[in-house]
Every structure is written in C-alpha cells, then in structure tokens.
Image (cartoon, rainbow, N blue to C red; front, top):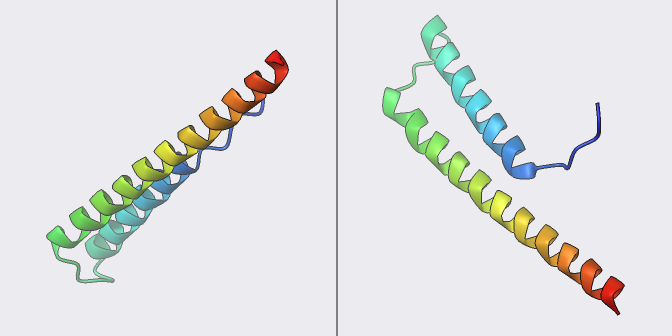
Length: 74
C-alpha cells in the first residue's frame, strides 16, 4: 500500500464521531445518564472543527505547492 498524505481534518472527524458513539454506547448500557440533546452540539462542534482544520491544511499545502512550483520555474 502506498503512503498517503496525513489529513488531520479527517482524523478529528473520526475521533469526534467515535467519541459520540462511545457516549451513546455508555448511555445504552446504563453506565452514563446522557440526555439525547447533549451529543448533537458536541458532534456538530467537532465536525466544524474538523472542517476548519481541513481547510487550513489545504491552504497550507496549496501555498507550499505554489512556492515549490515558483522556485522550479526560475
């Protein structure tokens, strides 16, 4: 398998959804008493953070790629 780029936005999204799933699992088994509306803001906030991190990562990589192509053109 070839190596791929590290994508921190996808990592954050996965961790947030995994955490939400664990919270629901704990609520289902009776280990935690979690109101249903508590996980929705947590999930939306985490996915928003993941989107912001993804956009910043894309912008940094695009800027770096542009700088490399400019230096090779000279």
